[in-house]
Image 1 (cartoon, one colour):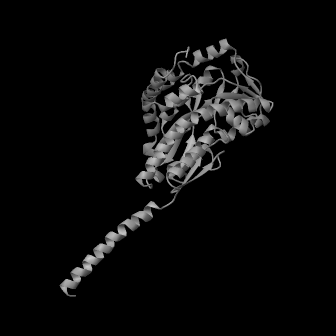
Image 2 (image 1 turned 180 degrees about the horizontal axis):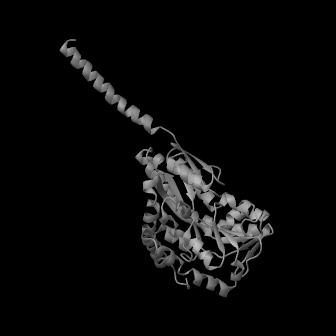
Length: 344
């Protein structure tokens, strides 16, 4: 080939290559990513948060991320949800952080009893920069990328026979979350704590394998627990937080702008869900009694006695584990700083 012709040919190839770059980049930008969001409950604040997150991400991504929400453990039990998220089969899991204790034991610090006084207080703690930095970074080396943290509602205890006083806890087998903070708290009440995922609780109650279970009032209403038990004792401790964990494997496949959208929207939903969570909590309490269930409050002096028994649980559990101790101090410090005076 003549040198001049060869030079012209080479320049033409180079120009075509340059022209192709924007086209290939545009095609990459147009790629659609599926985001499956899974959670163990339905028709409650966590479910609404999942739907809000899904809608927000779809909108802000211009449809480049297509979100699907799977409530009520449709994609498997809580351990399967966690594993699926780590391996990338599930893109987002919204679960109480203490269930991730097998990934990193520090996840359980949000389950310490007595940590917060109300949903509003809990939301201030969840939004605290130090707490958020700590909790959302956990699991980063094990396939998880945290994008949101919020409180759903206070916990309560459902039981087949009424628990009206602290003495009624003694000897009862009570389902707890997978957290030593909860285990120790119920040990102090004389109960036998049994760690169990939500999907196993109703049949365990029906079969008499447990006498009661701790959860939020929402699951008891919407999963029809009144078929097995009608008594709910409102201990209000501990708070039930939820964390949005994104699959790191999936997250790494996203273009940077979509990563930023997922991060930003996770934090936005964590904040915007607060009034919704409070409203739904009150509606669910009414729905329980409307369906024939009973809400029980401990006598004031016994509630105070319970809180006194719980006061040192956090320190006692954390002190044996340096990493947990350090994480607990971050959360406990934020809770103390953000606790408003009783007169407010």
